[in-house]
Length: 129
Image (cartoon, rainbow, N blue to C red):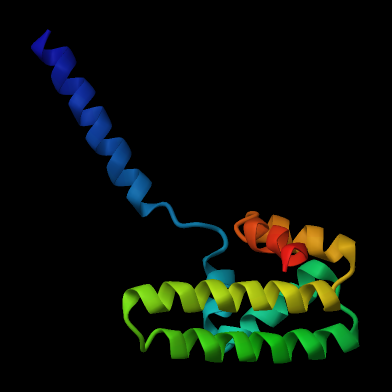
């Protein structure tokens, strides 16, 4: 019995040791992605362009909107917690309103899917004002 337990424990230890040595096949891709110096609004816009298939005109409008959004979010971080929460909610609501004017209904639906439907509440409030 002791021998069986010892063999089992050694088998687990060996398996975990080998698992740590296994490298992913996309490590090279990860390094390339991390080497790209795109952050903040530019990264968000790039993702939206690719995922939502934005037109050139939409790209420009979305880029400007994302810049404004990031600036407003950074400004809100300088305030106390309660004020920050209200400011962030307002920024997201205003962003949703602006996106509704820029994107097609299909693009809005895809945007909601990408956001994990986190902003669905904000979008449902758009018609109530």
